[in-house]
Length: 94
Image (cartoon, rainbow, N blue to C red; front, top):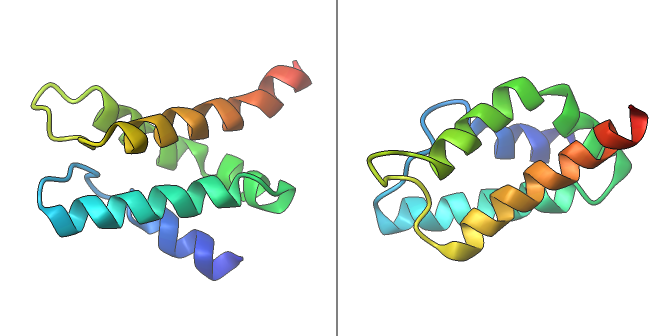
């Protein structure tokens, strides 16, 4: 689990903007890995631990003025799903 999370989250530690097709495919796969991790409590806990470094680049990619964020609707939906899934435990706690 630790290796999978590290690999997935490291993709977003730098600029998540994509343009080349192989980078779009890599982003798609990483997003699916993160979404998969968010379906288990240990995975969700790990995502919540690093939310301050993970989510700002994802949000920036969604609302990029240069339109260099994920171009596929499914990738954009996965980002929104991740944000909603991660916010859900916070709403319940408050």
